[in-house]
Amino acid sequence: MRKLATLLTATALTTAGAAHATDLEVMHWWTSGGEAAAVAELARAFDATDNHWVDGAIAGSGGTARPIIVSRIIGGDPMGAFQFNHGRQAEELIEAGLLRDLTDVAEAEGWKDIVNPPSLMDACTVDGKIYCAPVNIHSWQWLWLSHDAFEKAGVDVPTNWDEYVAAAPALREAGVVPLALGGQPWQASGLFNVLMVGLAGPDVLVQVYGENDAELAAGEELARVFKAAADAREMSQGSNVQDWNQATNMVITGAAGGQVMGDWAQGEFQVAGQVAGEDYSCLPGLGINELIDTAGDAFYFPVVDDEEITAAQDVLAATLLAPETQVAFNLKKGSLPIRGDIDLAAANDCMKKGLEILAAGNTLPSTTILNTEDTNNQLNDLFVEFFNDPSITPEDAQARFVDIVANAD
Image (cartoon, rainbow, N blue to C red):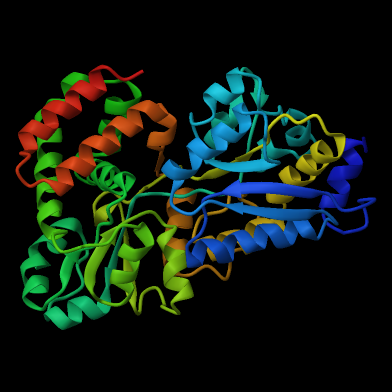
């Protein structure tokens, strides 16, 4: 096998290092217009190392893709690399010895010195060994608003959640759905978590999920959040779409006033040719608590009994964090780079807001880091039921929420 140093030098940056191309199957769930444009930048960078990215896109979402990926790996048919979110999603695969230790690559490339915030490297580290290559920071904490929709309704574009709720009747009267919300369960739980951070504060979310504080989950602060979730449920009536990007398209076309969604929505606005600050606005933390969570995506590499594939995995891992790759990918994805040493002068107004919040250190951990996958799935089930069934009272939903928190792993 070629030496690691040779591989990493080749990745840097030219096509001259590899003796011949190696096909590497890479699985992910990036299939919307903006996502496809972004993943094409990763493939282009890897192909430039004289290897070949074999795209293994899985339509749907992480909830659809993760079981397929895990089944392939434990069934003895691993892919070359795969995308998961930062956090605890790969714990069992790591414990089973099915994923590669990337510590040598990380040390050779100086990841601990360049990855910001450091918590992203912590999320990739188990027992002192590094098992993933983080590629971006994606935050859920955004409210996206259509300028056309509010102009049609004859009201000003809101600057915070309360103004948005107050504008909902005018939007309805103008034939606009106030809040776009797709049917995928993770969208409902994500909306609730953003409401928790915006209205109750980031410390509450961290204490409820990170410390399984059932008493806090049962208290008045969360009762207020559940009341806001009921308002959001009413605002989303008529949002008859399934996928998140279909909901984003409702905002893009002015069919909906807004959407609570992660900053990956920016990729869809960009593909549609819309301009931040002119065609749409973005409110971090619902315009109340301006911060971002440090969710995002990372790539993991299964253990394989093939030296050429292993060598290509090392090249891809290093390529993903190369400065040129980080700029090209994140500008298309709408996410923030994990490197603090690159030039993002081309960033739009919304990305610049995120960069300023990140530079100020106003961040919180994501639910994928605080919760196990099982706990997040239970929350998904609760909130998709709550948002689909108006007969479920906020009080009843809160009681079920408390039970999930109290019994979380």
